[in-house]
Length: 200
Image 1 (cartoon, helix red, strand yellow):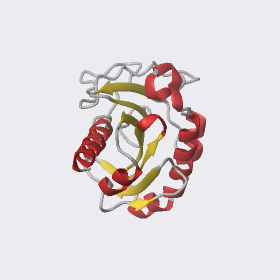
Image 2 (image 1 turned 135 degrees about the vertical axis):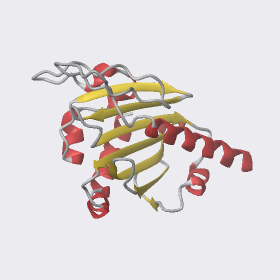
Image 3 (image 1 turned 90 degrees about the vertical axis):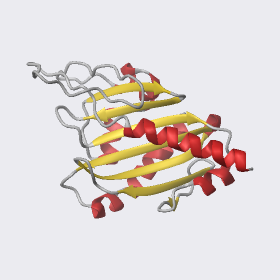
Image 4 (image 1 turned 120 degrees about the vertical axis):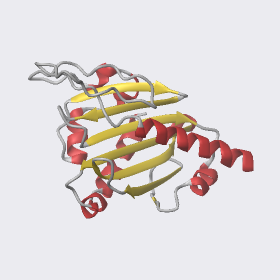
């Protein structure tokens, strides 16, 4: 049982690494700045986001985990109209990052990684500051992450889903947004997570 808990902790850490590595996309511009925003590290190499147009390229075109997302449903869940998407894969974790043009935040990241854990092990390994969620996978939790490093607070939803995979959805607010706003929107993000799990 200890081995299973250690394996799950490793899977959760890999998912977190994927999320933390998705802090930035390289945003294309009509006139490229001399110093471009660096591509994210820690979650594999992200493809450069498509050139902006009147009709943004659908996230599904980025492939990978991005095929589960579309801008309309994400906007309904978060209130943010995202315009660029990029997919990544590293150390068994697959991730998709969405952002608006020319800004690091708000951002939304969806991460998926395989696991051998069961629901009991998942619950035991959940962060101490998390709250249990019902009707989402075999086990699930939500938590609010504090603002920092130029970002506002974040809502994180994680669950043990189909195909023996841990799925994590994280929406990060701009730095001028308070933690109370993040807490108020946990329900919407959890509902969106349920929609995503049903599609997988």
